[in-house]
Image (tube, rainbow, N blue to C red; front, top):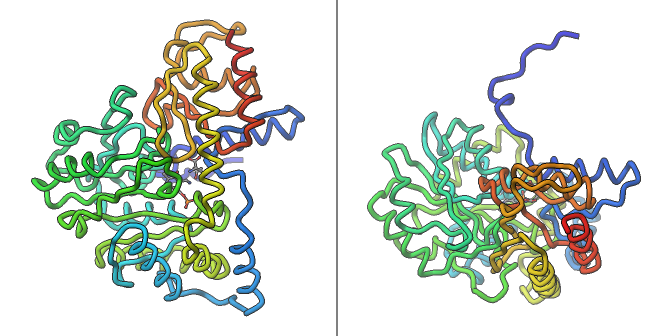
Length: 396
Ligand code: PMP
Ligand code: GLU
């Protein structure tokens, strides 16, 4: 049957590599193959009971109508308090917009800010969807390569070099997906000093892994007085609260940007899900101690996976300071043949691990770094041990 051509936009959009790998792993599992999934960045915990109970209560209280486009006032107040409590940031309610996941928050900002040809600086490795979201909104992603020696963090010199008259925004995540790196206050200050010379550039600081931090402390670019008016803080509940499927994210931003995002989603999705929003009020109002058991567990797993990977040949690792990923450089394997398969790049390596070790990871190419693979350790210790054992057996 002949098909009417799809738009050029959709044809040039890539399928999300993280979701594609997760789907492939699911497919193989359905065929009866025992796949260990270390590809998706998704906590393996259930949403805590106190949050689930708030959702059940909301259903029983008949929260079933359309919600305000930018979120319930009570939720925005909870977000306002969270920003004050955790980040020393004061936002008026007009500066907050609640969305259907941080992914929509990011898309909203890109769509609200970008005209064709506007450049967005993305320090590599960056989260897989950044470049496609920017491209979808007619922007041009400008990749700034970093390496393991610099702990995958962009230097002020690199930032300066990447800025052109067309630069509109800088996007990064800290803690970083996929490297786990965390920018310190001093490092952010050095980047902010460069940005002082370019006052029109907006910073998008994706802080969705804020609470999954192993002791280095969290600092937001918006906390600098001179950056507050030009920083969009993106956050959400998917990761720290084990609520990936509930789909709630939010921004704290200059009012004009928050309003633009609200206008956009008012035409595209309307306000986010009513029950999920009520549950998130409870999640955000709770003391952070309530979710600490998950962070402690991620810390144990981080130690385990670093120890195990260090015993394997050809895996050069940084020490992730946050999130639940490790991003080893595996380029020592490029050019070698294993199980009759020649490994040319990280994609080949990741496929080898899937097909021969039955362990799902994600190629670094999806994150703008072709020398590495991303391993998510949001999995049980038993799964992590078995996965690394299998990888060792295939490679040795
Ligand atoms: N930013 C980063 C860095 C992420 O890893 C994710 C994971 N999905 C998101 C944003 C989007 O999160 P959400 O589930 O809230 O859409
Ligand atoms: N952020 C997660 C990841 O990087 C979830 C997948 C996605 O939303 O793309 O694996």
